[in-house]
Length: 177
Length: 352
Image 1 (cartoon, each protein chain N blue to C red):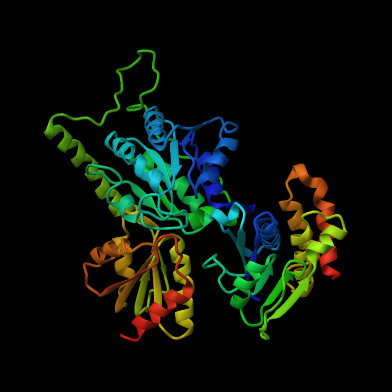
Image 2 (cartoon, one colour):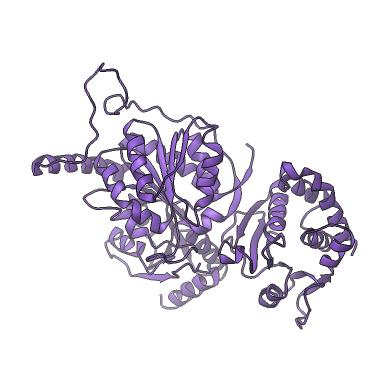
């Protein structure tokens, strides 16, 4: 796979940009070319928020992802808006706690897990995004678990280093659901 | 060399500090605010001054003051803020002072929007303020180039004693990419014959001035400056030529748009359409020699911009209208897609 276009979308505050950053750092760890582009409009202040991540073996053209190979959706408006843009053969990971899957496409693979519920059940407040990354990790061969862990260590700020084990746990939950 | 992951805005700031910038004066505006925020965190540790001024106008005049003493000084803003700075930029040019000004463009006119734009091309290259003068204008297309051109902008500003601008846009400012910081050993330029710094009456006063009430004196000062511009036009142009040797259609684009266009050129090639890309990295001086080289085999040119068409004028001038030049653009903060650009290439390809 030469280039993988990833789009992450959800509500502001769900950790969309944070999850995107982890993927970007995974690319950095694996010595890939990569770009990370956030939406920076009023949507950052509540409302929907999205983030484009491109991981590639070659220099990256447009960093704006319009037809993702991988979509990670964390709310209904984002799912409804972007699921139709996913490239045929692409994969969609979504939180089935918050999203009703009424997509009828058969040319893409849909993976819904109740990530919000799983986060709540396991006392991982705000871990829904990372649980979805875990699911994505299992269903794609984009990165190794080791790379993902290194990516998390890079993105979690030093002051919050105590939260790293929780993030690892969230990845594990995502991989096992 | 270690690869860091940074936003374009942060990379601009870090590169400036490493290039020896000692004074940063700014005022917040989306989408360049991270630059000033980074400076606020880092500058004092690097032994410099970060100051958030009360307005853009104050900030650019502080740059004028700091630059007058010979230190490396910089300001940054986004489109509406750059308009406010234009008077100060003209004074800096008229006083022959080195300074770096960064514009992370957003949509205009007026307050416009906050999404990426390239609609300040005319402002940057033709008239960033009143009077006969130019700025050096660099157009990076990646976070790495933002680093490289900040370093170069400080160097050339000192070398030619004139303001230099980095013309970026919201997309480049907000995106993160891997970036490496080369070992930077800024050239030391001797400023002792003009800098207005303390000397305990050991020499004659140096006066920084842009006022000449006698027309012949003013004319002469401008003619001297234009002789410098002639040298710059000869020696400082830079451009990327991509798949231009045999191209039928030459696309012209700079900055973030050039990335989109490159993807479209690659798709066109896969379809058997001979497309190429000319990407100016200096917008002033415009790479005239380079575009003529790139356009040698082209039957048509297509300028693609995030504006209603501004660089397209320079493209026509540079090739002396020797070939048809078409334009495609999106504006107001809309980023053109590779698919749209490819459609334009196909449309033009069908008419060749």
